[in-house]
Length: 496
Image (tube, rainbow, N blue to C red; front, side, top):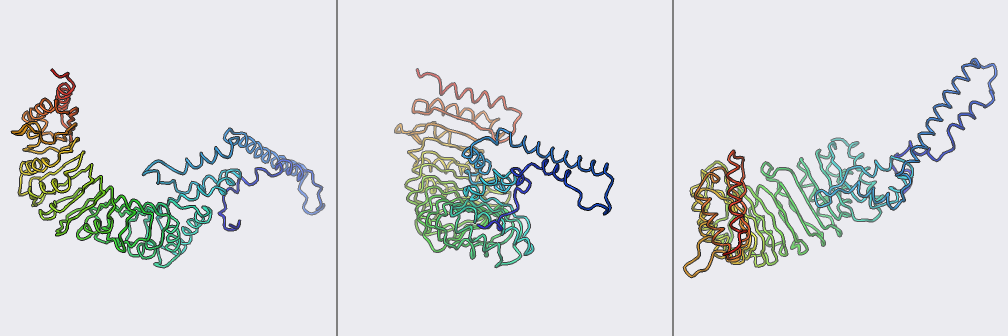
């Protein structure tokens, strides 16, 4: 890269290794006067001005000498590189969030550090920018020039890119989009966050490019509950892509399948036919985390993910229809968290669908969290939902760790503490139980007795831990502590 393309960094430090500035001042002071008779100042004034100049130059040299004598200046280059790398890379967000502008800031410090940074491509391969203004062509040129410096100085290394776009570019075919496209083609990680509608341009000019190094793709447009229904249509050419994450915009996948993808996190306000595309285009998923708002769907084909091990599903105001709840197949599933809630409006949840979903999708799990709150406006009661959960748990013979969010009329704890007529237990391998409760449940003697009975009955079958977690503030917190101590005492006491 030519010197002319480099930003003006570290100018103040360029004179550190130059000849003594104090010596140059003395030479000026002693230089013969070649302009006799041409407005010569008095000798005293000349002497005073020279002394002031020399004094200032000497102070600058002393400051430079002290700066060079700092302990950090004596560190070997290898250690400085490690320090600079740690200063730029943070541990947040899986270690992929960077500190914007750090290479420039380090290079401005002194000539030594500038030389190190300019010859260390790794430091330029980490790109994290929050872009607040792109309303003019000058803004686009300024931002694009800065991004191109990363492209040039990172050599041919794959890039970790994090862009937070707060302003819509002034041009649909300008420098910003072409530069971003280059970044994407070189990216190992590409994380794009925006508060403006650039979906169409982003997908057509950037995300559709061949990205041979891309292993992680993340897109966010803020809170999915308030986002519009602008669909992010992805046609990717990324053979190494592993996780894909999207929050806000519904994701419609094309040109699949994508067999390399192992993890998907999709939090959206809309998942109709898009939901079924997950099973079609991402057949090798191991981890799936989805959330949608008001998005019921129907299907007549089995929805199978053969290798899925972890499942997180959350939603508002809509559970699966019965015919869909029966069609899931996750033969390798080990861990699941299912949470559905309902706003203060008329709604419905079919208890039969709850039972069918647990039987079809969750029967292989070893760790399960269930939070199904029917709410006051639902046409079925929490007791009906709880009974449906118990019917579903009958198929979960491998379950070891159960977490339940408890609402009025909960039937699960009584069922877990009572053996069947043949002596068999519900969830026979159960090792731990956690219960999230509200204030009303804390004040219920009935539920306390049910948990105590469960601890006493299942201690002999392998139950070793019970935990009660209060989800909201209560002045009666001492009651919770005494309750937990009682359960611990039962489970930890030696068997008779």
